[in-house]
Image 1 (cartoon, rainbow, N blue to C red):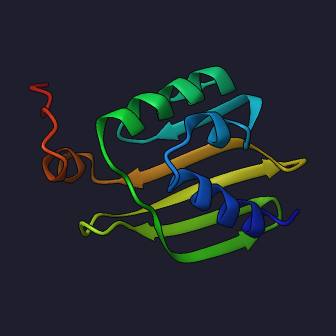
Image 2 (image 1 turned 180 degrees about the vertical axis):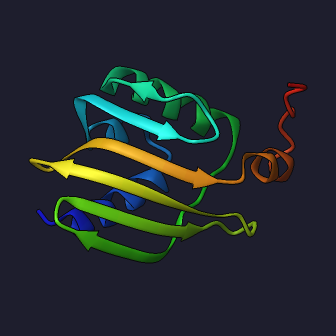
Length: 119
């Protein structure tokens, strides 16, 4: 499967807020680094991260663009509340092995009425 196609499917599952299904997209040793947070390493930890995130906020990903370069897909997204971001996904053998995301964490926390860290 082409990286662009895989990310289209990933977005569909993300919007279902199903941590179990979204974890299936990741390699067992994958790294998910949302730059506003510490890297999350391993499929099990990534699943737990999504469980926590889906439980704390209703998140919706609207695709603006998906670009593909070799085994990389780049997702430019927005959400219904106006937040925008970009994700980079390295995909090998139809599994995400590395993901890095850029978005405004402070805006996200405010939009979802979540606590803002003091530090």
